[in-house]
Image 1: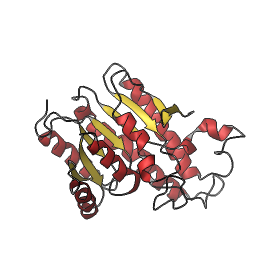
Image 2 (image 1 turned 135 degrees about the vertical axis):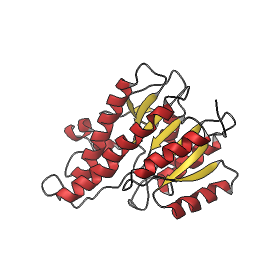
Image 3 (image 1 turned 180 degrees about the vertical axis):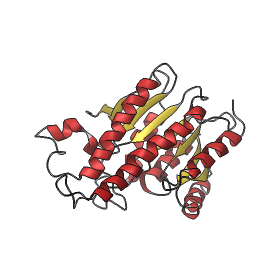
Length: 245
């Protein structure tokens, strides 16, 4: 089955040199997964990988730069040469909220840039890696979303998601949720499971006022990445509970 993974599952986690992504890498590696730590900057990725390697974890860095799709192909080819397949893809990469703008005044450049990273690059990378995931006996794709992308939440008066929310970030996550559903449908006759995760309101560099740490925020994505054969697909989850679309 494997070339250099000794039969262990192989995962790629994007946007993983810090915060939630780094915590996902650690938790997957602690479960015996060989982890490829994706980062747009090679030096930052190498430094983050070394912190996990120092704890004896099987982690190596890989450049995934949303502004350079050639890195997507380079990553695909490197994974194919080294492992011949990809078992887990965690699309963690993304840019955060800009609370200064609502639907009434969001600059078009900000809207386009947010969609480019949070949606278009995720679709592009996933499609390029899908042939390798299809070679896995139990492929798993996890899209790191947010409950702020829930249309049901925005439409519910009592929900925390109502009010003047940042359109660029929220709408990009709504689109990512749609991709999750459509991809799960397209792969419904395969062993691949596709799900979206809401990490919670996590304290990270872009969100210093978060309520939980990255370690807790990583747990939902990790659980979905390690789903058993009878686990769900085409769902949106937080800590094992369904989140409304």
